[in-house]
Image 1: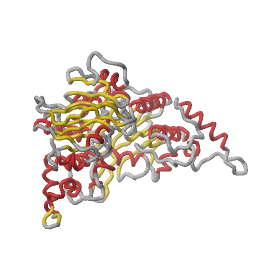
Image 2: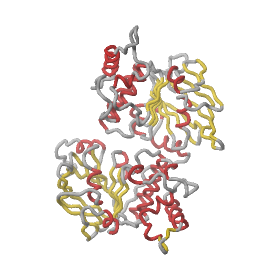
Image 3: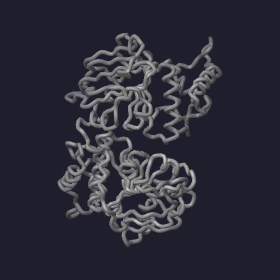
Image 4: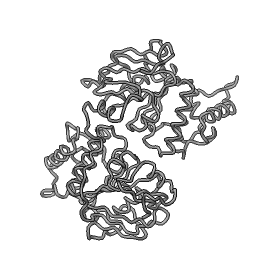
Length: 509
């Protein structure tokens, strides 16, 4: 057990419970945070993490339980009380005033004033510039927030917390929308905060981040703490097993399949200023990963293949059929399906029912005498829900009520209902919990065993290494390397993604 020289924890929560009507969201929430420690809070969606965080932040009040901050009993009736006690929450998507400066956002509602009530802008800017410099970031107090990246907006939220003398910083999925360099910068900032004895609660679905950054892990399941231990004593397999409540024989259930005929053929695909001379094949029974840094052009290639975006040169074939550029409907008829990266904006109609979303791509098959029968939609949703282990009791409920992992399953089922020969899936597990990830991987493995060809775009290198038969790496709009499963490693993929010249372990396409 990790030893702490401090007499009392920075924060301690014991036996917390919270119910909303007949739903018990938190049964036994427990957490101990120490100064200068990054503590991971893990669990599947619905495990109770969000409810626990909202109790700490003063958004919800617990039905039972005890909370101590620096040894003093506390109970927060409002978020302002939690903030005044030294607790700050950094959410995945910051909420800032875009048309105000960084300094004005940080000091909103508490600007320093002189004797006659005039705001002391110079003092405010100097203080904020000092905070930003201490975090090692290239931002200025007088910059407008509008146009700044999500990563920079998170830095502003962190600076705001420090200006309030926050002693506990809660970071809820802070890396979900960040590129790799932005994640590395955030980690450097978190390590600086550790040196200041800030206690940090880090919530993530990415297990590689747990081992890279944290010192202790607490795991929740079904509204209760089920396990905690020093990170150094754990393995990925042990964490996964504790989170899902069962042993997983393998997290990446990649089956060995002998590739068959070419199902997707791309030759010389070019869109000026976006990507150039993209050529590759994907065969039946094969998962080909398209890897690379954010901005390399991977999603743009997928959109062009499917016909959403136009291209200037090249051709795409499904089997022996050449696709007409800019015609997604023709691509679907030829046997191509695309699960987009942003499922909430591009993959689902959140206000419509689960059944309607699941059947949206095949409504023509369900029409009888000009009418769509709810029973047909429900049967289709039930069929794919069973195959993909969808956790939803009522197919008439809005898709927006589902967890991220179950939303992804609805999008996947919607496209599989078209009976495609080729599936393009963009960031298949972004923002979903580890249990749902394992189920998505299992579904992909089953699909290729049944002869489907899969093109998988992913920024998660463990996912690429675990599931792909071949890896195509993109750098600045070109394929910089093709790497076999046997030769693939994180270092080789990253070197190619960074454009580190021709590699002896692969070949330029």
